[in-house]
Image (cartoon, rainbow, N blue to C red; front, side, top):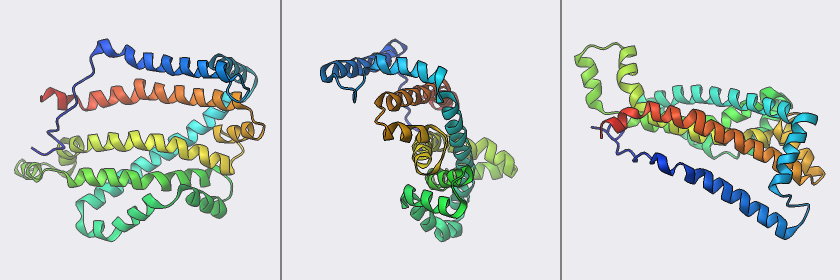
Length: 263
């Protein structure tokens, strides 16, 4: 049995220990509040001050529209990069000729500085959403390709022989044999890629956009508005945590349930 199909899954965390995650979050807030009281400076506002400022930004300013714009850009770049990276990764993993011909392109893409790609896209296409999303896709796609290629290379040849013995079509072979083996690698690419996309979109918005979270944070920076910067940061963290615990982790447990069932 291949490692992709017969891994040793990590034992599920006991439900009684779920409170530890929330305790660590409360501890972080407590340490932040204690540091703010000790420093007593406008450059380190207390968490309750920042939370109150979030309420004001939501009602009186541009917080919700800014996050809507950034989320839309991140989602479009993420989905595009995942689709392209998956298709190219499968091609590289299944064809030795294609792999040898284009693998160096992937290596170069993974190591090109994101800031350079962004500047080139903005120069070539202008300061618009097309350039920003293209820069995001160019930065994230090599990471997806690498993960998917590794997953394809780890396929167990015995299952391909099984597919031929049962005369499965290409579609059936992919759905019943290849796709389950790729799921862990897809999830890894999605999880790491999502965190990367957030950061890249924000940086690119600072560089060349007139909307979005990155643009707003750059304005806060110009006026040394620490409350605004930390308010947007807290909302950003809250969105990431909701995605992790409401969408990504439940999906991961559901798709990989067969791995724990085998143990």
